[in-house]
Image 1: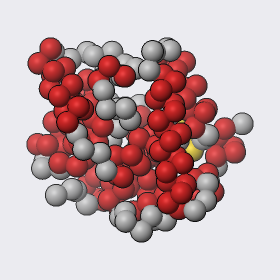
Image 2: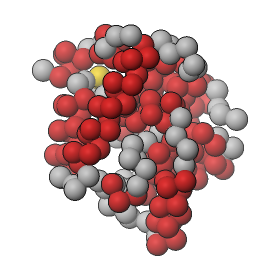
Image 3: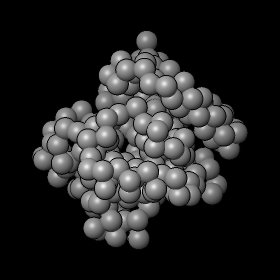
Length: 198
């Protein structure tokens, strides 16, 4: 069972009070991108996509962390019985399901690291996981942008990792998949891309 829209939005507002920052605006734009793209996919619920996009970074409520926000978000959602949202709190960072492809720092215990490693390896991704992975790469706190701009934004902050290019390729593959589903460029569905990209 996942939360309704109101509950998800209230959770994000409460999380912002715990740890204010641009991550909540980013989360809102991810949610809107998920909703807009899902509304053109016959097999997806735009409402569910919005909620899952909104909650993907909810683990940041616990403070300024690197990969710890993934497991903090997982636990936050599992405590409330939101199993799919919990999975996406971790899966959104692993478009390639291998923990070694992480670009962040594992500021977690060894026990939590091993849990995440196993979780990522065994997780079965569906189109909601893939949609959030895509939209996470489309949204700056200020709004939607070209994937390539977000790639550079993240790389400037995290540095170049051995898996950086493979991660980019995977996101571009996911974009092609959804564009085939919706029959047009994803950018046609996202207002402000030009203004935020150039």
